[in-house]
Image (cartoon, rainbow, N blue to C red; front, side, top):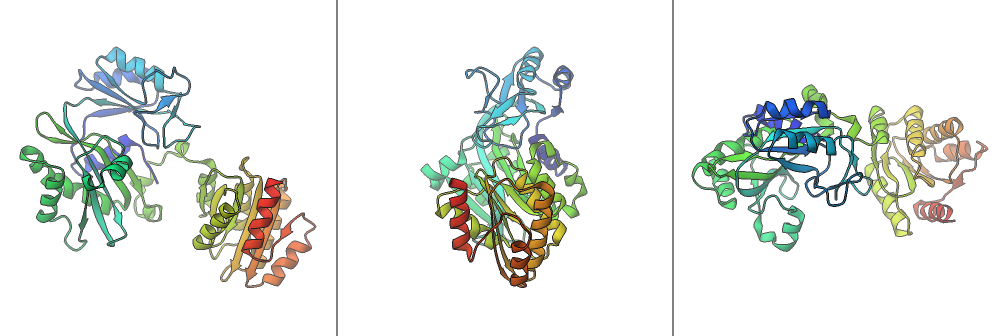
Length: 397
């Protein structure tokens, strides 16, 4: 689960991280009051969407020469003008895709005198099986480009879980970020704070870009991007309360109600599969034959008829879907249950696109019998290769 920047800063501030004063607003009428509550005279007006690259983004409704989704303001009047420009309009960044995202919230923040911009993130490094800091002196930039052009400028420091952030770890991080004086002292407290927040709140990613050294020599978290492990949200009611469903795909929201693993993609072949590995293989073979999957949908090993029907409805609700491939290997999941769920959903919502079904495993003959006797226009497949060829051919005419 992702949250907005201002929410991430509230979480980190609760652990003692240094962040600027700021106020989140949802209407232009709140902008003046918000700005007046801050020290000033420099303010930053930040679009709050679940996507990076906001500063370099462009608004669909504004001139191509207009400023991006993060703007400086040197007066309260300028804050209001920026808020008027940004709220309700569609911001397009590298991460939103061409459709962009509507800006429904802004964060008005006190400005900062920046001496240096650094990069810091915390994630699970699966190569060593530990939580790790990833840091660079090249903050405020596209870190992917830094990794490509100058990988030596990115340093990884893995943290032993039984020890936490040690003095030796802090020394490595301070050295990697070229921190000294007050900034290095701030690092001694900040790095353990961020690590503690990451672990205690079951974060999947904590990214601070940039982490700044101010002209007074102190560190400040200038931006914060945080995502959480959805499987651990049952432990964190306070984090669940921060969810903004307006930032999520409506199909993914519906899928979460049924405990379905569903991710919307950009293709036109809907996929319903049981098991993550089989789902990945199904998407790969669709691509191999020249088409693109419209979604990742794993109904899991123990789904019932109702859950299968719900998954099918979610897939068919996507107007981009021009064909559907159901690929089931029945182990715990029985093929006849899948067949009954698919048939029930088709009878309820109708079938306007080609449907290819490949069943194998437990009760496979019964499953095929249910589909063959349904009277529906369903294309049967013998194996995954056959299924992929048939659905791609059907969609491409």
